[in-house]
Length: 290
Length: 288
Image (cartoon, rainbow over all chains, first blue to last red; front, side, top):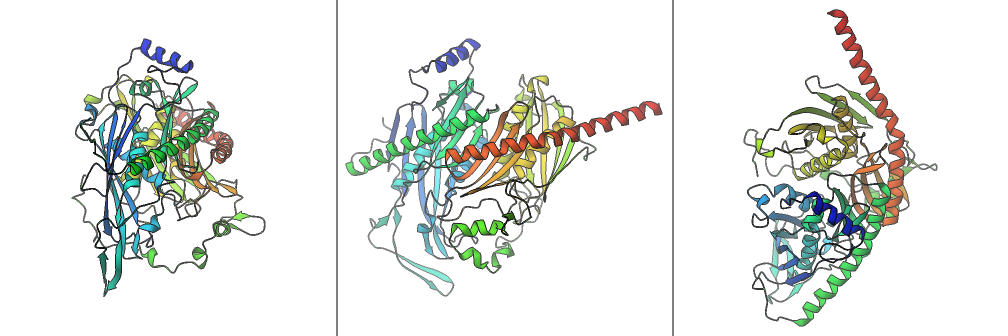
C-alpha cells in the first residue's frame, strides 16, 4: 500500500478509537465503507465489473476462451486469475513494484477458488478431454485505498455473476480435431452458478481488537491480520495470516468466527444487489464518468 | 517475466508419464468414505505408514551442514527433506532499501526433482508466495531492531517433497537462524494437519494432503501453522479447503499441542550445536 507516515500520536489516536469501537471515520469495528458496484462496463469482455470501496477501485474483465483441459483434469474447465497493479494506484507500484502484491492476491484467489464447492468447473467442459472453457479473469487495480483483498474478491464475484458463456450446439471430434458449432443467436448464453463463490474478508488486529475493512492508516497501525475466504454457505475456503506480527491462538479463532459471519452477510447483500441490477435491465451505464 | 536463456527448454508437449497410469478402481468411487478408506487401513485405524492419526512422522534435525553459511540446518520429516542456509547480517544489497530495522529476505525453492511433477529452475508463483509467507512468519520471531540497515538472507531448498514442506521449512529456518546467532524472540515450529470429514491427520504425507476434487470437498482441508511455543503466538497460518470455524478451532488446538511437544526436540538440537561450537573453540584455544 502507499507509504503512509503516521506519527506516534496519530497511531495512539487510532488505537484508542478502536478500543472504544469508534474509528476515525465514525465506523464501528465491523462496518464496511460505502461500496459502488457496476457490472457490464466492458463490451469486449464476456463479463466485467467495477467495484469501488471508498478509495479502492478495481476493474475486472472476464474473457472466455476455448482451450484443451489440463491432462490431470480432463472433465473440468478452469479459471485463470491475473492481477495487475497499475502504477496509477499508488507510486509504489511503479515498474515491477506491484508484482509481489499482485502475485499474492492472485495466488490467494486461486487457493480460495480451488475447492469444488465454490464453482462447478465441470459445467465448463465442452468435449471431455479435448475442449473446455477457460475463464481468464483479469483484475486491474486502478486505485489503492486499503483493503485490496476484499475489493478484488467482490469485484471478481460480480464479474463472474454476469459472465455469459456462449452455448455450443454441436461438439464432435473430426478425426483428432474437435469440431464445434456455436449457436446462431448471440444472446443464447449460459451463466455460471456463483452462489458459493467466496468473498474475502480482511481482519486486521489493532491492540486487543480486530477491524473489518481497514483504511491505509489503520493498516499501518496494525502488525498482523488474517484474510479469510468465506463461501456462500458460511464455510471458510482459505485463510492466510498477513503482516509481520503474530497472533494468539484464541484471537485467531475468534477472528475466524467473526470473519465467517461477516463474510456470509456480505455475500448475501452482494447477491441481492446483483439481482436488483439484473432486474433493472439495460439502463444507461454510468461507467467512469461519475 | 524473466526467461531462462541459459538452459535448453524441453519441448512444450512434454508431460508427466504418471498421467498415463491406469486409474485405481477406488479412485472412480465418488464416495467420501473412499478417501478415508484409502488413508486408513486395518481395524485399529492406522495410516498407510503405520502411524496413528495424531502421530507425526519422526523428526531428524541437524545444524551446521553448510560450511560456508553463517548458519544452516537440515530437517527430515519422514520423506520430506529440506535444507536451510542463513547468511548475514550483512549490508543491504540495494542501497535504496535502507531501513532503520533489519530486513529479512527469504527464498523458498523446490529442487526440480523434489516433487512428482518436475519443477522449473526458476521460482514460480507458488514458491514466491511461500517465500513471502516464510518471511512474514520469521519477521515475527526475529529481533529485527538488533541489526538496523542490514539484511539477513534465508534460503530454503526442498530436496524431497513428501507433504508439509512449509511446516518443515518454518522449523528448519528458525533452527538455522538460531544457529547463526541471529537474535530471536522464540523458535518457530511448523506443523501441518489434514482435515477429513470426521478425522484429523497430523503431519500428512503428500498422498494424504488435500487435493481439490469436484463436489467432495466439504470438511476437507489442509492447514499449516507456524507457532512460537514459548510466546504462545501464531506467526504463520495458511488454510485451504472447506471448513467451519469450529473445525478450524479444533485443528488449531491439535497443532499447538504438537508444537509444544516438538519444542524440546528443537531445543536439544540447538544445545548440541552450541556444545559442539564450544568444544571446537576449546580445541582451537588449546592448539594456539
